[in-house]
Image (tube, rainbow, N blue to C red; front, top):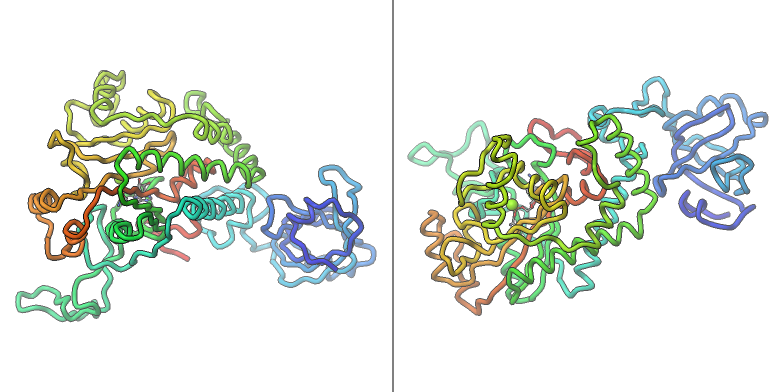
Length: 477
Ligand code: 4AD
Ligand code: MG
């Protein structure tokens, strides 16, 4: 008796074998054919029930969503659509599923409805495919760094510093919210809080990763990060996962090379390992886009799009060049952008980024050397005194996928910058000491994991690529 998964059974060339399998009923047709799924594959395995020799009560309990245990024979299929099937000899209902109330019926459900049923949505083909891909991508990321000499480090989730400035933070406190201790000035006295100071959930592990890069050489983090911005968009989450490599002795050019090689490598890995899920999602996207006007449809199918990114160089463009392109662009001249680009120094909005990648270059673009005053304090100042060695990687359909930079390694320049921005030196004393003892050129970047999963799966809303999304006014499940 073998206990194999559906994926293994469908792949195997063995026949006439004793089978023992557990899974969930997707459909039960003609009182005879169960489509059984156990999560191991997009495909169901057909299980043929000998209904004449199965009692009526049991037959009635074989309903969509029920968990069942089946014993039988794996045989060559008599019907079309599958090569093997299971001839059921014994079926035990492990868990009933009332067909009147089970939300996931064998029909098309809207993504909004499925979000409200996020605990059950992986019982569908789309969400099980997305989440299998998400898992494979995570593995591919760890594999890439492991094979390239990086150490995986865990940076703190709770942070006592709010200096990074990457976004609004969520406070972490153990004080009684109804009756907090107050200072003489009537402010909440965080000295009496759990950590003896104000603490928040982290927006990034970068600063701590820098400390480790400056001793272990090459490190990366892959963990949850939290931002309390009220951005209710299809690309923002309040809790998302970020991958942040940080490398000593690497400059901005090396950082771009690393990011590009890394992205191509993980895309290649999923193409090789999750073909079936990708093909399914490609078809889903085609069906979805049928209802859109031609101009809004993707030029490439999902898999060709992934191949295109793997096979072509990312376009590297300085912020200054990008501004020139945008200034001269049709939508800018015709005032079709919500924010018209008038002068050097303005921050790019997502409409501008999307114009550059989707209309102008039609490929992933690495924008670099941004104006210092629109980027974080820690970025390395260029010799021109007004730009910093920052880079953002923009992807078609996604916008900003990666944000990174070469870090300011000169103590005096960093201190000067912090003074100008009113960042407390005492709070970041340890970060400054990294510049005092054995400082060196170093760089890193942050990749928003869910944005990568969106790109790979072709899903249009970031809420549909993370198991239980956290967004403004939503922390269910
Ligand atoms: O550009 P960001 O803010 O960069 C940092 O946090 C740096 N400390 C990274 C580094 O250099 N180590 O964020 C990095 C990436 C963005 O490019 C985007 O892909 C993603 O994180 N991201 C979000 N993803 C989902 N929801 C949000 N609210 C996000 N904010 C940023
Ligand atoms: Mg950014």
